[in-house]
Amino acid sequence: MRTFGSAAELLAAVGEHLGHSGWQEVTQERVDLFAEATGDHQWIHTDPERAKAGPFGTTIAHGYLTLSLLPTLVSQVYRVEGVRMAINYGLDKVRFPAPLPTGSRVRVGVEVLAADDLGEGWVQLKNRATIEREGHDKPVCVAEPLTRLLI
Image 1: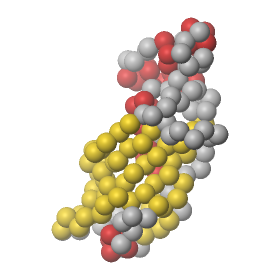
Image 2 (image 1 turned 45 degrees about the vertical axis):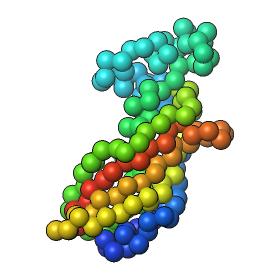
Image 3 (image 1 turned 90 degrees about the horizontal axis):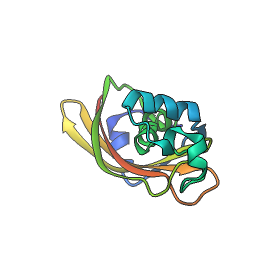
Image 4 (image 1 turned 180 degrees about the vertical axis):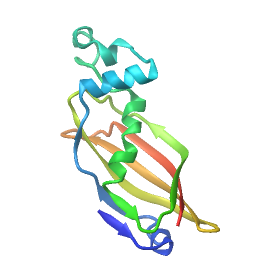
């Protein structure tokens, strides 16, 4: 876990790879709950029997479910002391280069691409978050989340 004690330390970390989270399993139950929450019940996500004969041989996680793991996984990689508020400001880029079969374990690697002092205590971060599937070279998600921190 990388800890930043100030905005200045965070601004100085541009270009650094901050490390990796722990591994987390993506279960069928989690996929089913996500389908229920979003209304996306496509069979490649929710029908294990039909999915066996499909293109992936099993059910796969929704891309947006994979993306939604970022807050939990990234919080294991770094933290900034003294943050009074953090806001998800959006994403610059998201790609899903490979499917994520249910039952797989994932982790995230985080690199700081940009950190800008917006004034009045606000800092905007742009990270590259690469979600890796255990035992595979190709990532399942590469995203550039933007976060605004009030420090």
